[in-house]
Length: 441
Image (cartoon, rainbow, N blue to C red; front, side, top):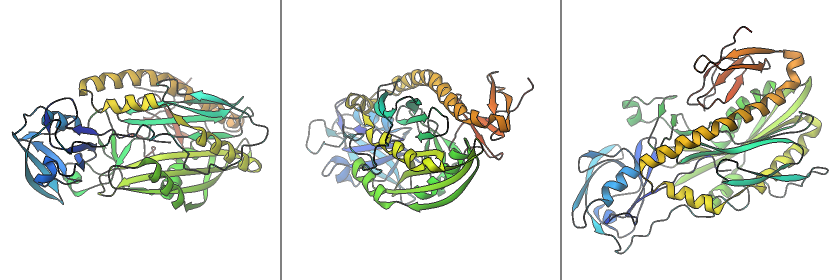
């Protein structure tokens, strides 16, 4: 499951005359040169992959789209003076603008099949006996479909944190409310490791950064797949099932290798995968929980992404069946080629149009966040006899909630997504989570 889609803005596409032969991408540190076309004007001038682009002809570059627009608006034969940072050193690279339609102007966009093909996790997992499946389609953008167990309560959609930052998610709850399948997390942002340059600009661990396009990036040290499975898994499982404890974890390099093969990243990237198992208590029963995750980071240490997350909570005697259901759901997931093509087009649109579209997506997403919260609460209802429930009120919106006391600390973000934690530590992946305090009836 692709947690984040990075669409590349191409300087030298068919929108204008100016051409230098580079692909630019927005990152935590700013606009980065993702690729340089061999033999093109930028290549001849000495621009390199990984250069951080600060300004063009003394005008600051705020985004990849802005940098591309500045280049394409220039006439062939004129000079673009690019202020860059390479290896911590500021430099000026003078590039003679080329003519659109010349040689060496081919740079790859995201392949139409980048979101299809076999799932990373074990495609040979047997279909559980006695369970039939039905199709669930993303109701917001029709971006993907996948199989979900028939008769289970299932909710899923494509959450959009920005025009280029997307999070597909699915939740499925068994009829007896004892088995819960989790895929993806709608509030997961992009991350960036702390850096010397970033710290000088005031971006330290835990701070929020917006590189444009409505994207949100949190500064956090890189978590390889196994560490992410342990850390995020404990939070995600503990949000739903009391007394969550880590039992074991291990790296899964074969999953990482397969993910990299499927993604074919343009920027040099390192992939890591891992799994973690947990125990917890639900409806007075000891439960088994498992999380598998894939993360990747650019080799220049500019950004990192939690690409894939899938897990389950189930009674110990039904753990193998829950695992099989989760794997079947994952391998059945397919992306609509028409949607992929539209998503690629977002990188070529004006920033104003992107911002308007993101606002529309955010309004649509609110209703599906409410449904996701409801499925979480359905699972937790089994514990209300033991823990009871309390009233909570969001001081910002005035909205009141009746929530289970399985975990005492509640958090809500700007979309209305609610999570709970056993301690007063907010979810580290949430850029806008704030406390949701208890209130009298």
